[in-house]
Length: 112
Image (cartoon, rainbow, N blue to C red; front, side, top):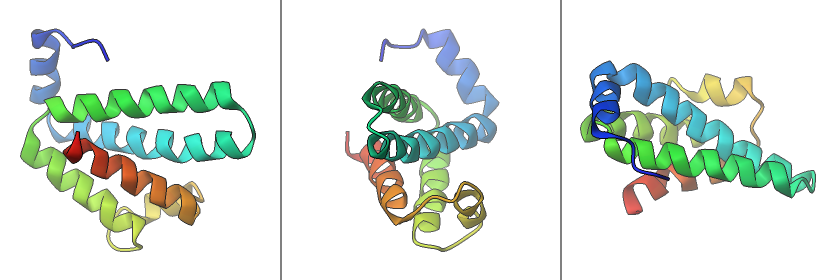
């Protein structure tokens, strides 16, 4: 991802938890859809989902670390069927393979 200009990063940080929550949801959805596109043999759409996933990961690394960590942990727990975000995953009918991919994408934010 091209680096975001510093003023943009500052504005996104100022927006706080709402931007983080939206970005984590987008990370989860693009991760899950990558699996679905692979199942459908639609590799062009899979690549698009992977690009979105990577952009979300990069953005999360630039935002307020403690709030990002808190939100990522909430979604990570949801992939194991625990907590308030389970309903979000159920709403979109993500299966176990998709939840594993979501968890992997969440973990990649901290690793890379």
